[in-house]
Image (cartoon, rainbow, N blue to C red; front, side, top):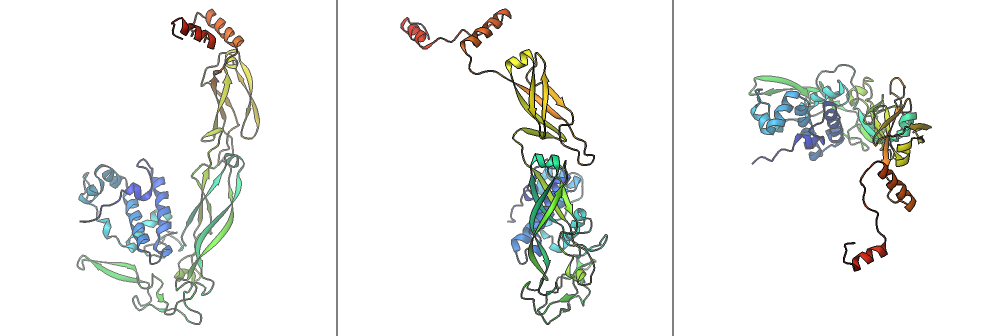
Length: 390
């Protein structure tokens, strides 16, 4: 009995309401994490890589996603919803998946040097990391230091993968071409794929470098100062060109290609006082009952300056007051949004005898029914002795 397939939304760790951009970002994270080149010999990582690619192919296609949402995995296999039956993803090979990366990285990043047509010079893999900033830093912009690990050219062999004193030799499987032909469906068609023996390099290493074990690449940590522009939104990314991984060995050894990019995803931390709405800021401002009734001028601490807001007589709970230009800057124009002050009327929990008398006199003038005065302790005891309810 075949194993049950995991839900595609669970595979990519997204909600069912996720839009195309969220799905693309989730897939990119999963692909970077489980890519076979980053997890050599790890069967579980390869399985997760295939699973993520399968989920992305369905959820990024509007028609397939609609069928999947309605009928699940079985609907895709049977071609429900009026569309053609889809193929069985469980037979997907890692090399077949690389073609899908062009949809995300525009011919660079993953898939560069892995077969298929390139739409420009071969590039190394793009990388992604995250950085957290405060709302105050959104206002002013910031410079943040990020630390990440990337596969870089091996210092010992210079990227060849060969032991010192030796050189790679021509691949006997593909005769140095880097590609091989494969037949399918009983020879009905042929397809050219990356040579599995040399991974497209055209050469193989007989004696491996002791440092990188023939990969030509080593994981290296890198620290980098990244400028975060003012007005950036949560989830947006700053691209740092050329800080990704180097191009494939067969390209870099020929002096061609270029490094991928580093995408720094910005996470804006929650603020204890302000809520963000685009370029606007919202703050809940407590207003005393008497201030709301009689009017008052209130001092408001904005994100970077103090402001005065006039509360008119008779202000109701939830009333809005706008301070223009006291919000956050627009990422492109730099023009600042507004600060919206929402009045929250506070009712005192405890009253002095004089305060209670004044309020009761007010209620009497308005002919408004209110609760009877609360009796003191000894008055409650006397009522109990007289058989009255306290």
